[in-house]
Length: 361
Ligand SMILES: *Cc1c(COP(=O)(O)O)cnc(C)c1O
Image (cartoon, rainbow, N blue to C red):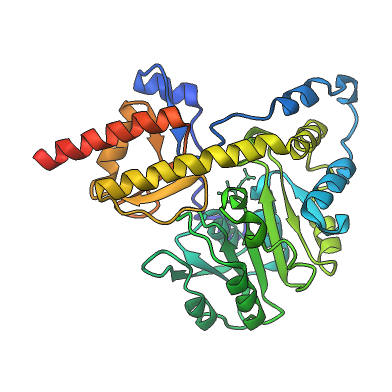
């Protein structure tokens, strides 16, 4: 066994909803801890999956994901050859770590951020270097630059960032890329960018064509509502895309998933509706937190990160009312997926009542 994995702590996945409901003895549990799409999945995806020919089951899937590749390339205005598909964006994080890291290298992140970057750095025997966010939880780009050494082979930028929800302007990201040595990979995780107010001008999608060391990543798990299908992709420079295709397992994305993702890309209306409903609810939450005097980060995503003195106790109380929030990302803070308007109303009442009760004690 390689030394780097001996002490590895596994990612703790979400428990199946039914299991958790049974454990808690409640009839309805709304999971607001995994940033899933609360509006479900496009009905066009259901149609496409049902129309899939079962007689293809004994055949390997299209290893090039040809139809999906064409559709995504067109949607994102990139060259089809720049695209590499993966089993969720998670697999892409594992794949790039495996490709660009050797034991003893360093990986630079702004903290807090998505934990998978650290996990895969560790598996490759690389050392994680964290630069804390600024007081408003924006990225400290000067701090990141000061931490760049020849040992740093990868820098992760999650934009908008999980768990803070904050986003960084494209101009700042490009300026940062220009200061980083060409031998350091800059990986931009855009899992939540569809939810940003100015997604079209925020995305770094066009940068891999300009800078060989830049990679942009997307997933179908969030705005597209396909978390169960496990599909994401990376946009690479023409210099690195062939290497990534060689590292990728030949048949990683199965045919049903390809069919589902293609239908999801075509149904632009579903994503637009999801983004609009999320933005309206996000605004309702900002207004509520302002009214309650609860501190929160400016979110450009489908979740909000907020501070609460007894965060764990609040999360526990809400869980028993049927809402699970994400704890353990920072002391005294909770991350809450923005759910439907009806659940939002209910949840805001519960939090307001909890606040009033704690104030009396
Ligand atoms: C959810 C998430 C992912 C992983 O998404 P999958 O495609 O479901 O593997 C990647 N990055 C961030 C920041 C996420 O929050």
